[in-house]
Image (cartoon, rainbow, N blue to C red; front, side, top):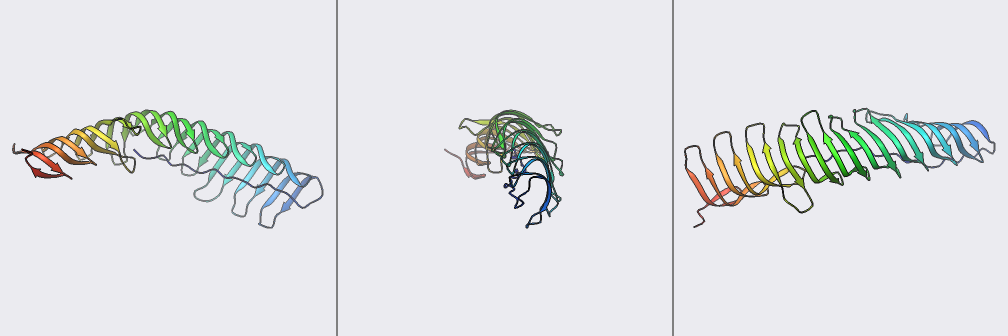
Length: 264
């Protein structure tokens, strides 16, 4: 299972203009930004438009030189997108929707410039997570579904499954059905690979967020081989029995996927 990726929020610095006059103004700053809006006591206050040399554009409400209230920020470039929602003191804060050009989208709560609270995230591959967020990552109760057959529910922490059940389907067609635990309790279920291999038993959530056989399980190959026994770090390790298509057994001790001999 892969960690879901996210697009970081943008923070702003206060606009304090040198003009002594109040009212509607157009100013070009030394860094190239064009500022069009209401000025009070040298600071943007009210509706304003800010255009960056890069092509980024903000249109929305200001108070004392910072974005406060409803606004729209358009990010330029191939990795750009559009945020429409609430701001507080120059940060995304409140309800908002961030849509990227790669078709990923988040709609929900922000606090202090990050996704915090309840929201819905749709990845560019079509995975949809609905649930809690903390510091931009899935955290709390939620559900994860996809058009490829992925359907999981449970609790996430820091973007990873903490206590999750259901089905996960990788991009290469590998399918896992079972439980994903990183709380110290046992994970396990059935993993089916596209080439016909199948594993049933205990697993751990390994680096890269994928399932790795670990504990006791049964592994079968499309050529007819069958192993029943212990696994560690994805390999046959400990006592176990491999039965070959011709009926020949290898029953005994295994280490790192290699048969060591009988345990007697």
